[in-house]
Image 1 (spheres, rainbow, N blue to C red):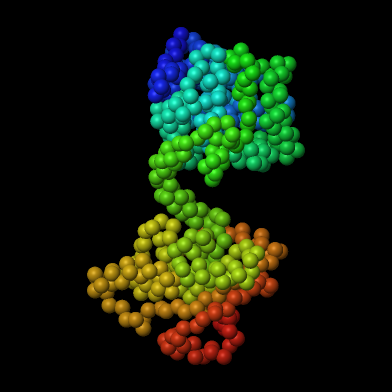
Image 2 (image 1 turned 30 degrees about the vertical axis):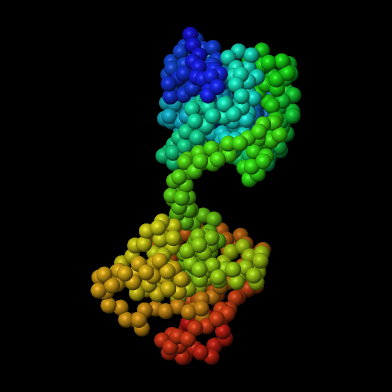
Length: 507
């Protein structure tokens, strides 16, 4: 038999929990000890059509249970059972095995304590994530409304436990950090991160995305009906009606309590300090929350760079095409503009001419390998190229106004005594660059469903100007300033009389 444990807040008031070792459970009555319950969870036999739902307490688990159950059964009818009926944290092995399929097995344990077969079978996981400030408020109201083993302390004292000691399911920050690492370490495992605030803002789209993730192929109409049936007021009404829904905890709550469904809204606005806890509680610990966020997101920069690099490799969400000698390169304009003041200026000038543009195309007279090397540096922070390209990389960096790269290349030249004559460097001026902004809606699909070349054989090697292939009604932005460049002028004497702003087609 499970025996609850207790910790004392800073005022000496007891907070009760079930000590499962690596996880603290709510102090529910169990036939085993809480540590034995962890072993029961780990040994749960998983079926092929099971859905696993997990996350920190008070992150919308009852709400998502209903949505997932309706999607699984294929109709917008409330299931008779309630969430605790399929909650692994309180079920015996026999009780779990007796549940009829499809099961929405829910828990609050971290990834490492999920059933072993979930990992082996790559069972689909819905991980719930909610603003921790809302979680803290909701959980405080939850524990103080229990008639047995409830918490009788104050909000400030509870907040101290929540932030620094941990309550049920331990500390929010530790669990969020753990899930972040596990998701990164198991990219092959199907995990849907269900953000509470996104579901509140657009419940229909949220149900549609859950349906797509689960591969259930339910209709849009059914998803809309499910979102409506799971609206807060309707779900709260159904949960309080014993003819519609079972409630294994109905006698657990104090008289007048709202039970599991209290407000069901975003009570905390992160951007507004005065409204962090709505109108119910006074909140003076914003700095404590902020320091925790700084701690948990300390490697955010590396993670963001890694994800952007992956998107660049896969040519996803790219809105900038750089047509270099030997092929096209695709990139994210915000990334390139962040590293190159020259590109940023060109983009800004172009956006002034066509505020509604959907993508940008630039023809740049530099070798494909040179531009790719500089793009790779922007996404990874690593500059790597063959020394034979030093002059080209240096001149490209100069034109792009990437001062740090210019300095690095110059230092490398000096340290290695590399002799490079200035007139041998490829110098790029504004007249060598053509900025094309696509503002035509009927070309959007054809021009912006961009896919990176699979290998070097697919790269475009034609010397024909790439701009010739762009839509006729695109806006061509000519350079506003020209620099005197005798070397380039000498090379272009044969073509000085051709119209400005458009490359000459080679014979």
